[in-house]
Image 1 (cartoon, one colour):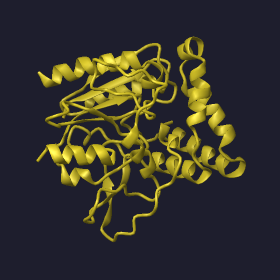
Image 2 (cartoon, one colour):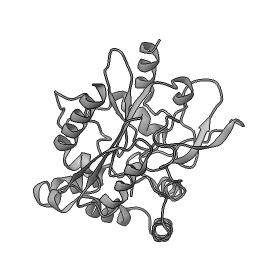
Image 3 (tube, chains in turn green, purple):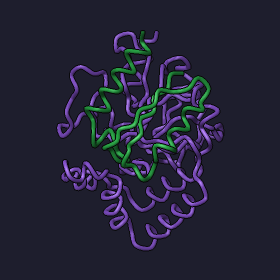
Length: 62
Length: 225
């Protein structure tokens, strides 16, 4: 199952280090850090999150 | 903290005797919930943590306050702050991203075992709560019960928005605060659910539970034949 993890660099509730744990998932994950986003990254930076999603979807769709 | 409390109404209890504890892999935070295996329509499940209203919102989930992104399968919605999105395999809707917010567990996983294609997570940690988190959640629950949710939500709206957005889009704070309409009971239920999350690392790469709003679910079922 392809996994994408996007962390917010200004997120105090779920830190990037917390999300790095997704790398340990069998099969790994695609990881991105949005340095200027808080806990609600998709709410604060919808264009950036969507761009990362688009790129990832294109990759997994081959 | 997860934005499950963006959904306003608590769920009715599932009274089915076939509701079993279920280690689900995906949600906006509540990974320990129940899955109703009863027959019948897809319904969210846990009296304690599921909020069907948030899922039902997806029936008309479009918000003019968020930009629609024309080149993306992702679409904006009132649940744009979702931490988890479900990518479905739907022939006529290639890779639609459905916000799985508000702890909307549906038993569609049992009906569409191969429908889920991938999981994106945004600011969602796979680990269960550490001791410090549990203490904080207990304090949050106690405060909600003693003082109500208004002050809590005021603080959350401030603290969950990042420093950059505070400067560049200060309106987001009040916008987010306006979306926080949960009752005290619902907030307590969400916090309790978040506190019981299991570790998702061993299971997250395997499809266990599919999530969707009802309309999307029906659409996917139709197209998946």
